[in-house]
Image (cartoon, rainbow, N blue to C red; front, side, top):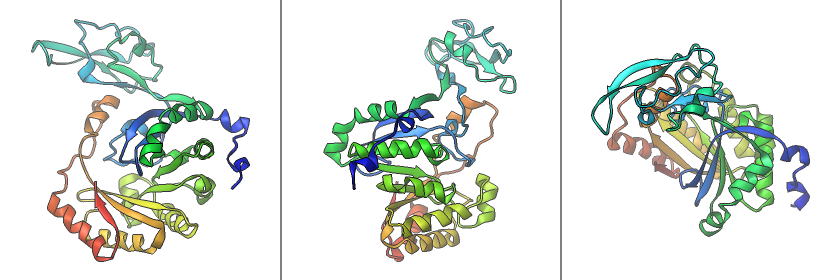
Length: 328
């Protein structure tokens, strides 16, 4: 394949996207040591999402209670909000001194995420989530980690949110990375038009692909989008010769019943040689505290994580079909 195939135009170099995190030394998002780039914005609304700050397509002000010094010791943010969204909030206990302290509170209905309050918050309890990056600048940033990729067989994973909701940027980023000889992976929900998926296919060495439920009505009721495009796209990827790693979040009372898991395993078997491995991801509640950074009153899914015995029984369903499967 010619170098021209990977050469970015000036227009592609200047494309921009909102990035909410760049995580180095990642070992869960594909082979080897990787850098994972998280683009902001997702069309799904999974109530177990461990990165709820990834869902909106714009910047937003987040608040981390554990960093707040309290109104008495600080309070510099009060009075900075043009919309009057900041006011005295709940009283809690200082984790260090044991003294009572009053925190600030954001009335989200009045907050327009202008970020003025964050300029006065030196402990960064209030901070803006999301930074705009140019394709060329982001490529230069992740290439600083290239020695780790070379020694471990790693590379760069583009994730989200849903990175394919910003298809031109994601395509250009992958293309530029391939031009540097870097292994690329796309971490996706699969919810997009096939034309979008097809456009990144030449530049993606691996797809990390989520399957949440095989029943369309249950899928739509829980995550607010149908599963038709997701199931169709993964089959088309396999037919096109892509390498696919299926990821299944195991959510209690949603998709962990034997019937759904058996149907999901059947889909995985359809993928044939395109399938590299199935990863079962047991539900955890580590993301619950992040919802509080967005809105203290937000209701989120909280469930008991599946037992080792439960996960083992689900794993055997895949093994009995001759499929490579791991629990992460």
